[in-house]
Every structure is written in structure tokens, then in C-alpha cells.
Length: 253
Image (tube, rainbow, N blue to C red; front, side, top):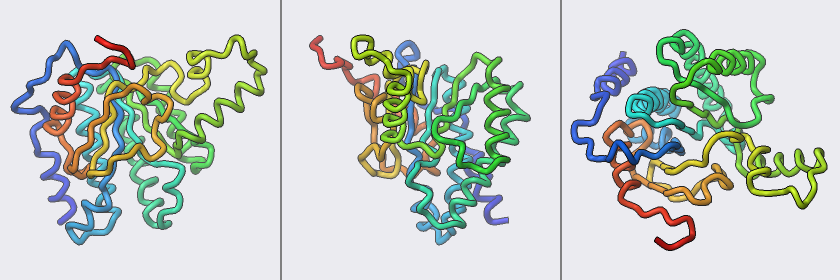
């Protein structure tokens, strides 16, 4: 009952900010988020880490819905890294269970929400059941044109870059034809625009092996807010900060 009341309070927050001040004509096309702080959120409440991940999953639903409603085209979240396997077996199992639950619910609601979903990372190491759900989700998603939510699962950017190099070597791509555009086609994010804005929650100020190639010219926004406490108002703050910056891409304006 305690957990139910806790999550109900999270869901009862307003689904739209009361003081939106960002320019709707200058929204970032692609927002990427490192979802950090679930464990610390739980520890502050003397709860198991798994409760933090459950609360974080509710936050993800809310933020993804808000991004769709305001017109963000791409949302990429760092859900589970290649390094996260070193966590305790119970915690990893809980995370995978939450993902399975989310995918079942997404499949049921995708026709209504029209959210396109894609998974980035090596999903071949996941359970056959999860792999089947991921495949089904992506197949259903293909017919939708709304926001695309990319979930980085068993993802590591260094591994992604090495994988791209190996693919290029296998294809024997000639040096003369090797460009940044050609290289990008061999990444998990092929055909996805680079993120305009990268957000990391919980006060940490590093990328942690997330979208290293793709974020070369992204704007970064760090907040002390723990991921389960991140809401629409917090996203608004990040967007306002993003719109206050001048993006020069190495040049001069």
C-alpha cells in the first residue's frame, strides 16, 4: 500500500508545467537523458533500490508523454549500460522485470499513444522473452509517425563505436569514401539526428559512456534533481536553459 500511495503521488503531479516560458518555435528536435539517481532516491527514503527503479519508470512514462505533447521529435534515454551488469543480481532482475512490464503495457497502448519505439544497444544478451517483446514493439512502431523514443539498453558508446569500425572493416569501405556521415550510418543511431540537448540528473557531471560520438555538439544540462523527482517543470527548466544558449558548432556568429 505504501508503494502504491507513493507512485500515486508521483502520477498526481500536473501533466503540464504551470509556467512554461520556452519558445515553442525553438524546441530541441532531440533530447537525450541519462536517468540517474534512482538508488539514491530510494536510500533517502530507507527503501530498497528496486523501489527507486520502479519510481524512475513512472517518471520515464510521464516525461516521454510530455515530450510527445509539446512536440519533441526524438527522446533517447540511457536505461541500462553495458557496465550495469555488475550490479547485484536482484537489482538487475528488477530492472529487467520493469522493462518487461513497460513493454507489455506499451504494446497495448501504442495504437492510442502513437509513440514510435526503438532500442539501441546489444539486445542479443537479454532473455528470449524480452528479445521477443522488443522485436514486437519495434515492428508495431514502424507505422507510427509521432515522437520516437529510443531506449538505450545494454548500451555503451565505446562498444558502439568499435562495432561500427568492425562493420566498416568487414564491408571493406575504401578510405576515400569514409566520411562522418558514412561512419554514422554504422552506429546504433543510424538515421536518428544527433541530440541537441543532453540532460543528466542527480548532480553527476559526466557522460558515462553515453552517445560519445553523437553528442559532439550537443548542449549539456546537469541538474541535482534525482531522476524519480524529475518532472515536466524540470524539463521546462532544461529547455529554457537550452534556448538561452548560442549554438556555434565551432564557428563564430
